[in-house]
Length: 231
Image (cartoon, rainbow, N blue to C red; front, top):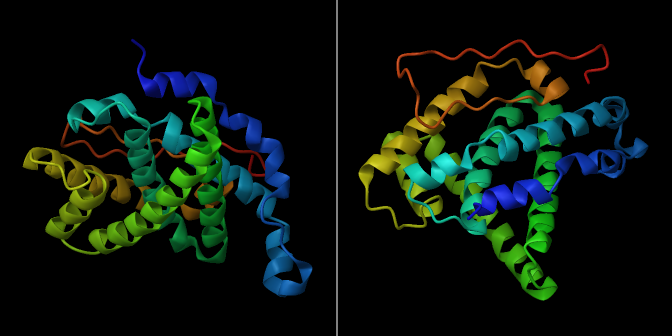
């Protein structure tokens, strides 16, 4: 039987949202010099945000997470894994000033568009889907706060945040928590090593594996490829 994540991947296409980029979060010319400056680069940031969100759902090995973390093959599990990667992207891009924060807004927008679309593909009733979206939104912002506190804390604090949110307080194997803590730490270290201007231009992120083949290896990001328009 095909895994749910495979079914959703085959029936949903994020690339169809590219024409929507021109309509996302228009910048008013009355918002001052910053708004006028941003309007010239906002299109590039929107496309980069789409690419970065796409990396969260298409470059993540969901099946590996299901296996290693003993997660059921459900839509909720997919969302929890996606949420974790989106959060790591948000943490990184918030370091890039106003442009980075603007990009964070677009990433979150695309995430909710994707969640709603996947719910429809699964045949979820519109009323139930709307109700679930409200619940997931509340859980998302609660998770963001918890993860933010965890990443600024020691490994015990991060493990507690992952236990509450990612594992829904149901993880009984400390090795799974240890694996996730190590994964988040190395992933954030990797993202921090990437050039911020390149991320704003390309949005390209290649995630490190959940389990390293060579634990002593240090993965360095490849130089991004883009033309003079940042595309």
